Length: 105
Image 1: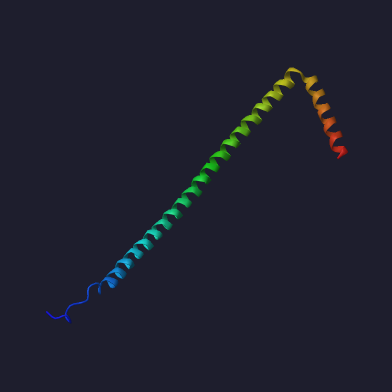
Image 2: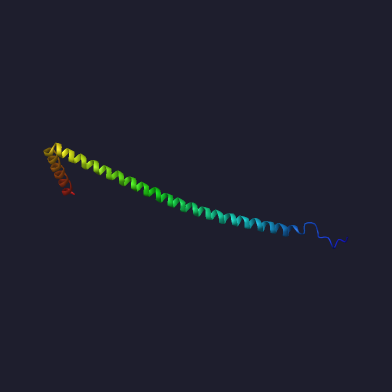
């Protein structure tokens, strides 16, 4: 065997290392693409989940407001039925004070 036929030791190493680095770089790029897609899906899920939570909260607040309104109406009717003159007097005084308050402004 001649020395001309032999490749110097390590002559193929740079090309091999470049190929390996290129493959690793492509794997990293693929992983970043997958991560980006996962983050996008997560953000969409968070948005829709937040919207659903917000809609549920709005519905619950609406139901509570309706219930409180009904309770106030029932209580006002009951008070008026039990004490009509007192209720009218208090209503008159409340209107008088509110009128005086807004007149000064």
